[in-house]
Image (cartoon, rainbow, N blue to C red; front, side):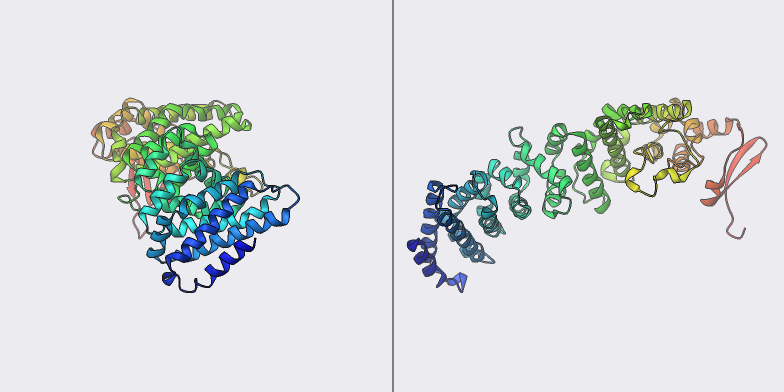
Length: 460
């Protein structure tokens, strides 16, 4: 112990101006750190000399703290500590502290925190340090640190991961043997949403790699997929359409996932919402629909989705099934005039899981048909126009469904004579509620047996 104290005291005398610290002082610190690593491996954390073991941990924390501080805004010290071999010794210590069965785990938190902060400071703005940390810690040690039982350790480890990541490293994460690390990051996005670093990792790196998105999605449970899709949805809304960074291949993959799994939502009509597995699978479909609606809302980079052969077909077919189920019996898809059904006792968490689902199906159809004659014709051939017109009434389970229906009809009729003629030939069946149209500034007139849609004059 006397040797440690003497070494740290000599080092401490030289650390007032970090850029002026001589290489000899860092060599002395490295010698102390290496000896600590050896003695901790040989020590018995559950033996009689707990006081000595605790002192070793305190000294380790002090070494890491000095290393951490010496690298702040000092390129020279970053390079010197890397060249002397501090990264390798520090990572061995961190691995021991995280994985060893130490009696009092709380005593390891301080050295772990300081050691990880040192790696973060060493890596900032220093590509060679980033690459070496990655090479020696990926994927196992990073995964271990992200799985620690201390929130600060997890936060600092997330910071190091974010600092080291680049496009090539993200692609490495998509490999089957490494995917657990990416999945752990996404799990933290769900379980610790206030942890900014993991959200930044997901939005700034993960969502920009189609290979990683596909690998993660395939390995996720449904509730984890919902978290991924929610982050993607937020990214689409927060960024300009040209700068969101989500590649078209991700959009194509999500459209395919929606087509293949959209039928799962129909199980909710049987009362299966009480089954968590069925509910989570349905929520995944609902989240996929929300993302596709956002992608096709005049985002030029994603408008190729209009040309996917089966996306429109699947969406119209699903709308047909949902609409028919809602009319066949009273169930989760049935229309209601009671808007209090949006929540139970004012608790938003108890909302129906399919609130706005049918409205968003209609919205997606409208987006896919915007200025696209082929899709306009396809909806007519699938007999979707009368179906959409049948959803122009107010529905408490689908707020704004009448507005989305009007929007979609407008896109279906634009510059399409056949669709216009079809609507003109439809017979009026029963009373219609035109209040939604009036709220939008339109009025409906009946003339010679036909219905005409006209804008309301501002002076009336």
